[in-house]
Amino acid sequence: MIFLLTINRYKCCYCGACVGVCPTCALELVETMIEVAADCKECGICTKICPVGALEVKA
Amino acid sequence: MSMKCDLVVVGAGPGGSMTAKTAAQAGLKVVMLEKRQEIGEPVRCAEGVGKRALCEMVKPEPEWIAAEVKGAKIYAPDGTSIVMSEDKSGSEVGYVLERKVFDRALAMQAAQAGAKVMVKTRALGLIKKDGVPCGVSAMRLGEPLQIEAPIIIGADGVESKVGRWAGIDTTLKLKDMETCAQFLVQDSTIDDEYTEFFLGNSIAPAGYAWAFPKGEKLANVGLGVLGTRSKPGEATRLLNEFVKARYPNGKVLEMVVGGDPCAGQIESTTSDGVMLVGDAARQTDPLTGGGILSAMQAGIMAGEVAAKALTAGDVSKAGLKEYEDRWREDIGKHLSRSYEFKEFFVKLTDNDLNQMLGSLKKEDISKMDLRGMLRVLFRLNPKLLWELRHLVV
Image 1 (tube, each protein chain N blue to C red):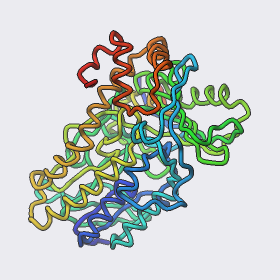
Image 2 (cartoon, chains in turn green, brown):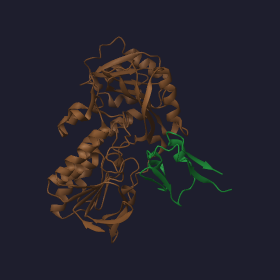
Image 3 (spheres, chains in turn red, purple):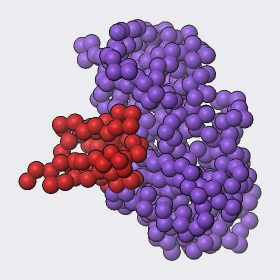
Image 4 (cartoon, rainbow over the protein chains, first blue to last red):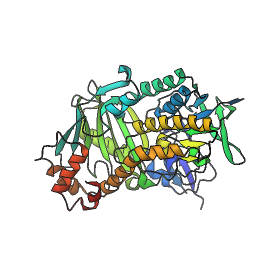
């Protein structure tokens, strides 16, 4: 099964908390947009820290 | 496009601006980059600062200050409260700032001192020569920009990349980050004179809720939850509950969210040609979450050390050691102490919190500082606080 980190851009308040906890440095906050790089391991740590619940690891 | 300077600062928050200002005043050619198009927005902060420490670094202007408070009230889960006066309750009360104005004013001071400020300019990576950083490659309004500089300052906040690019591990564990949400609330019941702190595991698990007044019945009402106790969207969900219960008729005028590092001292904040400042260096107070003042203090130190290192012709990690030594001696010691308190605090149950704050009810703590209060707390609750005994002397 393939897992994918998805970002709900309508929910995201672009605070960058997810970027700070990402163990593979795969996330980046580009002004108002979170970008996910290919090195994302879909570990889901970022989803827990997100204050608004904009991140989700989906199957 | 490419340019050359002595020092490039990534991030124009209070830490970056103080570094840029200090270095420019020392005669360095400074460029400060801000990825956003506006400095100071969106805010990710509860905006409380200690008055005395702020005034030691900058002359406060009335436009930055939303409110001045008399002290702090701390509420136990059962509603019992204690009051601490402003000059005694540590460094996080005094002024409640207007960060949008404050951050821009500090950037302006840096500019006036001679620094070049570039907004909408995002650092993409470090330029390296033989593995040693010697500049920043950036994107400005969609166009590439190379900035060569012997020293690079990472003042790029909680989402810092500069450190990681330089090989410094700044990744925060979930247990070392509070996830926070805040509303700007208008309500007739808001206490305009005190900052308020609300403890309780159902309000904010392993964190706390706060209300920082901003004048005219407005307040930053927010809360932080420890990362390990959070789930997706938890901070916002709990804040909605808290505001509904505490300010049922309150009007929400603004929303702020963010992650607040509570990691204590990280292993390294320098590498060859690189220094980290403020949230990027995880210099936030792990117990209170306050980070404005330490970022500014560290910024001044980094600016001074940058000037010295350039004069001495050694910008290697060894040449920048003075920065590491100076901030650890001052801010670092406080962070470590605070971290121990935080590690203890996050384990407390609501009963523990009720017992602790309740025990102070019969004591006169109005004239005590935090240390004095801890001594009293320890005397009254020796069993509960036993593991902190080495901190209470």
